[in-house]
Length: 210
Image: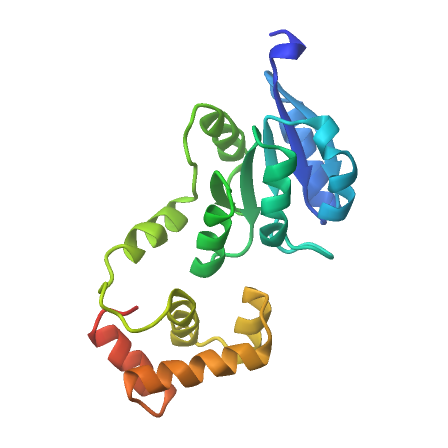
């Protein structure tokens, strides 16, 4: 295959080992060419428009600007580029924020190497590749009780609480302040007319709010 017909790929990933691993995997697969790798969005903003990749692999948790926050600017810089999120994070709110901000697909980092290459090809064909459990999460969100009084963010936080995560961990994983989490929990209790975490989870599950 001629090099100018290759699918060109750029990577934004702060972990050097992972970044180099993706670059080696993709660069040594026939029909693919890596045109740029970056440890942060700030570094990528300087040159990535010149790279003009067909596909961009983007991590979520990065030093400085997060991948989710950077998506709108990246889409403006690269209007024709398909952006694939590749991350360890599986929180529903992050998934919907990523997709809402222009991501074309969402993969977790435990995705086998051959599946990552296949996802790059799939997105070039117009698909929206997602890891299997991510896809199930997206589908299940449409099966919930539509009359829920909870906002999407409140639902996300209550789901995280139901898995046993602490308020601090929820704040860290959703990139929001601890006080914001506490405020959402207060609103959840008020809307569900409960006074404890256990009662909130019970009420939400009985009514299919989560």
